[in-house]
Image (tube, rainbow, N blue to C red; front, side):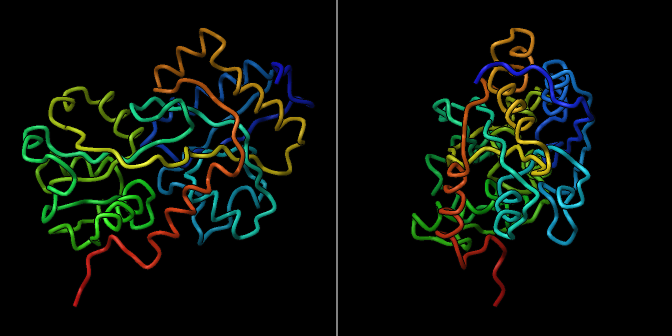
Length: 287
């Protein structure tokens, strides 16, 4: 794709992110500022911190035509697609976040985190059997579902853990580990990276035992009412972002290498995980 010029006609670019504070709001602001500078448009971004995607009990802002572009978890996008939402369209560009296992692909991982002072006790994930585990949500791909997948592969279910505690967010899960309220958690690798960048004092206090994944990176979603020409210009601009030294530095600050081309097949891997763990739950079992 060639570098785009401007959106036509010039208008506001209304954005929303559901991914902060886990992923810093500054990253999404950088994307917006880059698009403003590149496409000669003006925009704003709504920060919805309570949900990782449009909540199912509310009408989404694409249907109500309140946003043009959204950043959300893949589960939220898949749910809207499965519901037949005609007001969403996948942006065919996605970021490559840097991870030791990433191989330059638009994916992320679930890092199994323990206290660094106890890291030597664990040779592998199975050594966590009987230990306490906290999870951010029962439907979280990185915090719960991919863990259930690994447990099933090993012949276990969630009773593998001695105690299960719902934290409500990856950041709260990390804090519970630091406070010695639990032994371990599975954390979105990008959230962990951002947390340690913001709190360098914890870098020597937390350790990654292993990583599960890969999982498809969070999608960028267009309001389907946006002219296809404008969707293509935004996509082309994102694919060129790393070529500008000024904006590449912003990407590097947020642990992003570049944007690459994708299509909806990227999210098949999430559907495969959900199919594999169907009927399983990370929630405590009561008898």
